[in-house]
Image (cartoon, rainbow, N blue to C red; front, side):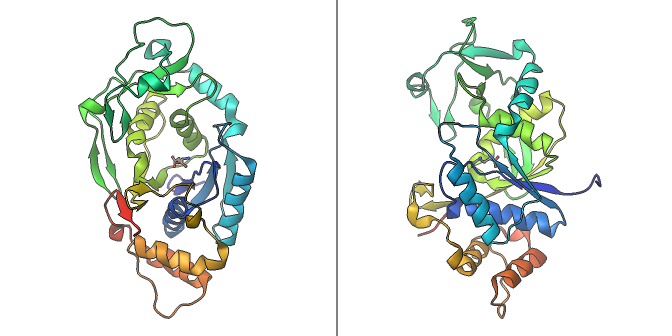
Length: 288
Ligand code: GLU
């Protein structure tokens, strides 16, 4: 495999049917990978055993097939529990501590739009069990996003984060291991995950994993609310696939060939004429 081969991915959580918010990530990551003659891998983020359901991962795989988005690999997080255990063992013990804070306690901490900022409440308690928190000491964080430009982490937003909850590994941790194991070098996903990028880059550095490229696209909103799995009217249906593809391309500000009618040709044209500079460099877009 060439060192320069682009390897991208789409990593949905199967906790509901695929909706247009998530589909925007699928289409953006697929077209960017194929425009760059790369591979596009599917990762089913099913580590959260309470919320993940097989019917939803099957729905996601079927919808992608109906929309001709063929993954070069399908990877399930639940097949990689041993990898998570092995990598967790490699984190020096002094960089983590056990935490007993409940959701209720966390909700009383200073809140930012990126979530609660953890104040190290359990840092010096020397607990012997609980959730495992990673200390995040480095504060000069920044990265160059392919869409949003230079993003800096505000010092006041540095916060110790969970790598393994009481019962299961955390998404932020697994994602770093998965991207490495899948050989991913370019991550295209919604801007709601920009903050997690800092935590993930922190872990990548700790494991001496290669540095990845990131493109965060705008997230779809319906008024003040982010479109989510509970928006049943925003579910994806293959009967409307041409209309859906065209609306996604419009959101991404891409050129749409005027005389092409078939779904397949529109997709092929989008891959050929793909222009990441045209993608709106905002973090959200309102659908109404
Ligand atoms: N599974 C995550 C989600 O559906 C996305 C993970 C990622 O793209 O890094 O929000």
